[in-house]
Image (cartoon, rainbow, N blue to C red):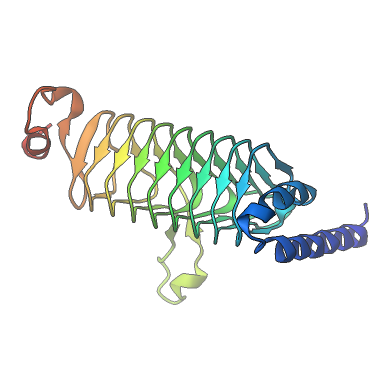
Length: 262
C-alpha cells in the first residue's frame, strides 16, 4: 500500500472511530451496552464476550487496542495508542476503574494487562518509545497511582496501594549549558516480582528490582534492589526484616517488622 493510501486509510479509521465514540459514548448503560459491544467491534482490534464498557469511555487509535472476555471499563477512562505500531492488550476479567488513563505513548510501545488485573480510579499508565509496561495476573493497582517509563514489569498477585509512583526513566542533566528538558532521558527498567505489597505513597525509581514476596512500607522511596521476602521502610528504603523471620503467631508482627534488623 502506498504512503498516500496508508494515510487516507488511517484518517478514515480515525473519523469512523470518533463518530462511533461520539454517538455511542454517552448512550445510557442499559441501552448502550449491547450497542457499544457490537459496534466497537468494528474499530477495536478485538473485543471479547460479556464486556462492560460504561458511558464516557474513549478510545484513540482503537485499531491498536484489544479487550478480552468479561472485562469491565468504567466511565471517564481513556485508552490511547501513539501510532499503528503501538498497542494496548487487555486480557480476560480485567477491571479498569473510573478516569483511568492508559497511553501507549511511544513508537513500538505496548501495555499488557494480564488476566484479572484491577486498576482502581485515576490510575495513570504511560509507556515510552520501544517500551513495555506489563502487569501480571491478579495484580491490583490502587487509586491515583502512576506508572511511567520504558520498561516496567510487575509480577502476579501484587498489591500496589494508592498514590504509588513507579518511574522507569531519568532525565539527563549533565550539561549545564542546555536546559534539562532538551537533554533527553535514560531508562534502565523496573521489575517488581510476584506477590509484592507496596504501601501508600511508595516511590520506586529507575533501575530497581523488588524481589518476590517483599513488603514496602508506606511513604518509602526505593532506590536500590530489595531481596525477596524483605520488609523495607524509610527514605531511602532499607530492609528492616525478612518475612520468614517474623513469628507467625505474634500479635505484634508490625512492630517487629519495623524494629528488627536484617
